[in-house]
Every structure is written in C-alpha cells, then in structure tokens.
Image 1 (cartoon, one colour):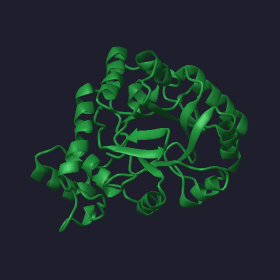
Image 2 (cartoon, one colour; image 1 turned 120 degrees about the horizontal axis):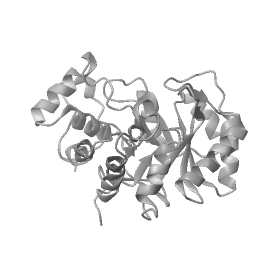
Image 3 (tube, one colour; image 1 turned 90 degrees about the horizontal axis):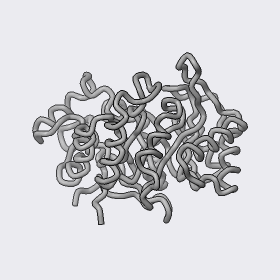
Amino acid sequence: MTTRPGGELMLAPDMILSRIGLGTMQLAGPGVWGPPRDPDVAAQVLRDAVDAGVTHLDTADFYGPHTVTELIRRALHPYPSDLRIVTKVGFRRGPDRAWLPASEPAQIVADVHDNLRRLGVDTLDIVNLRAGDATAVRPSQSVTAAFTALAALREQGLVRHLGVSNVTKDQLNEAQTIAPVVCVQNAYGPAHRGDDALVDRCAATGIAYVPFFPLAGLDGQGAEQLRDRASELGVGVRQAALAWLLQRSPTMLPIPGTSNPAHLRDNLAAGELGRVSQIGGPGCAMLDRCRVPLS
C-alpha cells in the first residue's frame, strides 16, 4: 500500500485523506487568473502528488476561473479510487479579476453543478462554503441560507460531505445546526495562530482543520524560533512549518500549494520529518502546542 504523506485521517468511512494534501490555487495563472504558465508542468504536479500518495486535493472552480478544475480533470480523470477532491463555493470571479461573494442559494446550486460538470463526476466528495471576504472572516455574516442550499444538495446525493471556510466559531455553530460539518478551512500557520482555539475544538470533536496560507509569515519576526529549529534539524523552514502543523493537532490537514514539482517533493517530505523529529518542545514558546505523540 502506498504510504500517505503525513499519515491518514478518516473523516468518515468513505473519506480517508492523506494528512498532507495539495492546494491547487497556484496551478492557475498569475493572480489566480487564466491558465498556468506551463500547463504540462502544472499537470505533472498533480500527477506527482497522486503518485506520492496524496489523496486530498483542494480546489475551487473560481481558481482561474474554471481552469484549475478543468486541469484536474485532464490530468487525473478517470480518478484513482482513493482520491478525494475538495472544492469550494461562495465566491466567483468578475471580468476585472475581482473576488465576488456568491452565496445566494441559487448561486450555490449553480456553482455545485458547474463543479460537477468540470470535474467530470456525479458526486462531489466535499464542498466547503467559503464565507467572509476573499481573505478575511466576516463575523456578522449569516451562513444559514447558503449552507441550507448545500445541505439540500447533499440530501440529493450530489455532495457527500460539507465543510466551511473562512469562518468564526459562531458561524461553525450555525452551520452545524443545519448539517454535519467534516472540515473547517481557515487561515492558520505557525506564524499566525489566531485560530488556536478553533484548532483545539476541531481536534476535540473529530473535525478536520485545513489551514490555508500555512506558510505565510515564515520570514517575519514571528517565526524566529521555527527558523532556528529548522536550522538545528538541517531542513528548510517550510518543511519544519508543515511538520509542526502535523504535530499541532491530530486532525490538522495542511494543503500547501505549489506549481513546482521540486517544491512539491519538499512539502511532502515534511510528513516524514513530522514523524521522526519533534518540532516544538521545551524552550520553544511559540511552538509549545504540538500534541501528536511521535512514534
């Protein structure tokens, strides 16, 4: 059996994900707009990830828009039986490349059908509702109408599982009153840990926490200790950060993105690093919450 990068997490009997996945946003062109600079290399990144045991691809039809989901289909269809593709709805792209909220129920339904068509599947594995703005949460925004529309699509068999993205704890509560939530996808990493409480809550309740932008800020003042620890281990700071995330919570599922096959290999190697080396620990205050015992 192929070794999964970072191990595996079972969210449901039909939803077993490699703990390191692949975020596909960077496979679009500059500004997440248009086709990739080199479509052949982008397709190779997808194939290399699957060959390396990745079973968790994160995408959205508004990447490009449409070009990344179409690339995934061209590169990987028919899909391996264990591959799970997680997509998002709740935003669209304007002709001026703007990120536009699209959370009206009719928009949610239309965008789920667009994802089904472009990915070439009858059922989507997981659909996340992207709330908030393009990069920030909006605590006052209700998710009820949009998530109710997704729940209806789940009842129709068009979606297997539901998640939320860019949400507060109260928005997660709101969604959970409507349908089960298997994953939360928020901005988080060793250099930006404002979501620590929600990470802990997800771990305690068996919900996957999927950090986007997990490698942001690694060259800043908040990551000196991580850089020192990476130097001690003789590895790059990106690998150390991903390994720390795996150790931070047993339900953490990092999805580092890249359009470079060499960077992909480095990212996936963090799974083994996290298994054999403690990244946080005594004397490392910023990294003091690594809770997965090493074996």
